[in-house]
Length: 314
Figure 1: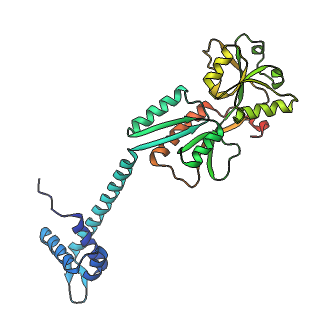
Figure 2 (figure 1 turned 30 degrees about the vertical axis):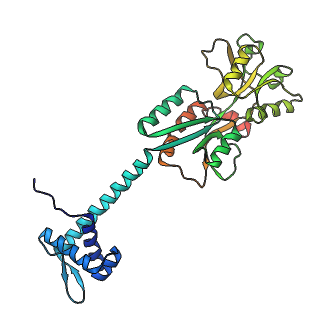
């Protein structure tokens, strides 16, 4: 193989600048070097190539035919190099850092682990942080920047957020397998009158929804135990402390041996989706995870209840 020409990017830039400006003075100024320095660079390039690239007169500089062909090559090389460097810098910047997601959904769902594993294979240098919380906490973390984006109920969020609704959630009553209400395909809110309830705190969206339903029916639910973790809630129901009402994504699995669930009739549906601040762009890694989580949310909260959605005013 013939040895490659020993030309630097600085020399290629000098040739391109002189061809564009047709003046040593103007080209030197654009490169922020002196005119004699530019003259030496052009002479070095021509000597290396063994051909004249520019014709000089006292009035102007013109590009020779060979010079035109070389200038086109130089500009293409410089352009390709810049694109490659920009791409490397973007990927290098993406290889380090952290992406934080705040979610109202229970994040122990098995499919989420597969999403996280796939993301880690694509972005091995990025640390993932998943946070679970009530709706208010999730929105506060997204607004403050503590989370890159959130998974939240998006029924009525302000315009400061970009919202992408991906599915809906219903409410389910969790109860022991031998409870009398298991004989019903759906549980009405009036069935829970005077029934001891294990509930989330008063600032939880689920709690507010069911309290409003009971109030409309003319009574108040008996919240005998209040918890803030779904695992604690499920254990309370298993032990017979009371019944519970949870979003569909938190209801017991079919393989559960001690408790089950029934849909809560006439419960208002909640639109579920991804939320981020309008004026804050996602990093490349965060945008990648944002895209990957879409299918997971659609699986957890599918869009199946079309007739119910029309009547639920979501």
